[in-house]
Amino acid sequence: MTPNKEDYLKMIFELNGTYKKVSNKEIVSGLKVSAASVSEMMTKLVKGGYITYTPYQGVQLTETGIAEASILIRKHRLWEVFLVEKLGYSWSEVHEEAELLEHVTSSTLSERLDAFLGFPEKCPHGDMIPKGTVVVDETVTYPLSALEVGQKACLYKVMDEKELLDYLIELDMHIGESFTLLSIGSYEGPIKIQKENCEIVHISQKAAQHLFVERLA
Ligand SMILES: [Zn+2]
Picture 1: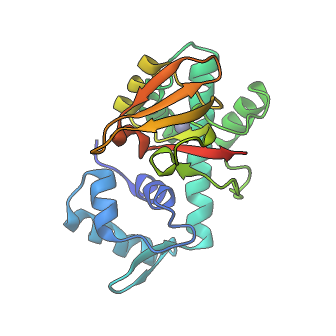
Picture 2: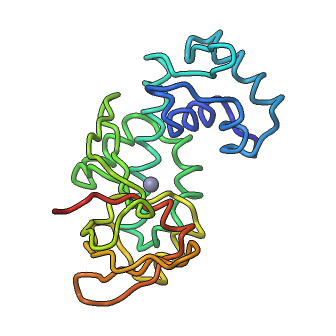
């Protein structure tokens, strides 16, 4: 499936294009498309008033662009909640389904879905579900790989990446889980943490870069 206009807007949004400039290169690797397709689409999006383009720096979403992307992301994340909570999907299985459903969801359906789910604030991966067009999550988070030994932290959100999510299921790690960092293996070795139930878990450096945590006192 070739990504359409909405997928591009969503990708720019996810690359933080709401407040900073996103390079074509980041979009190329995010959507796994050619540089030529990206520049072609960027021209269209500038014309449509969805993004602004600054030479050598990249693109940033306009208010219209943010509104469009938020609507889509909202539908995507609501479906993720539905699939996990109501249909028993695991959090590593929902992305693909939500990717398809978001494009065929009317605004009435997404409002009904929101109410049916009890107005959830976050998707299963810990990301905020935009309300209206406002997305504000001011919680300060750090990659787990940036913590020091002895630090207590809580898993706040994770990258929505199938392999990573499957790995976390294996380790039995969940959003909201608190733990203490016990040691960091030398030579970029695994990070050893202790969960509240005293269980010890080893997390690879690669995964630790994609897990975002909140520091606890
Ligand atoms: Zn998600």
